[in-house]
Length: 237
Image (cartoon, rainbow, N blue to C red; front, side):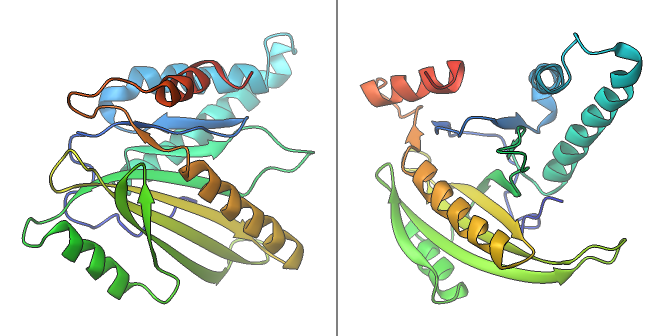
């Protein structure tokens, strides 16, 4: 289940005016959720299904599973869309037989224009607890917050789980009043999976160091941005 506390924030889901590149780990995918990207989404989902259940497998036994995969991915996208996101990221491959219990939601918001960017960042710091820190993401001011919620699964014999959420709220330096929100979630159910959750948070923080703006007016791609674009387009070498 995708969780995003920004679902009811003003300006969430408005027309995008910022773009960026960020390295993703092997096996992760970014799915756009807006209606105008429906064709791209269809291609991406079919690619995931084909990789997970290749055509070389018996059609009669695997086609129902392909349908379930498509249904699952569209359900994830629908939840993200309802939460006001612009895209959802998640792993599609198991690692050593383990499905990585993490996801990332990308959103864009606009402030109300009644306060400066510094005041907006300060209000984010005040609303958060002591875990909030001021950061710089590709030269842009940002706030990083961490929260954790524990809840009991009520459907079936499921354990109590903890959802750890790390959120970067980043000012778009070349779009007045525009903010990018990257909300990462990792789920754990015991002390062992909690250690994995800690490692996944470190991974997310590392990924955020690769975040680069790509539509800065009057600027050409730097060598690093071109490299990131190549990695995102063709995968790791």
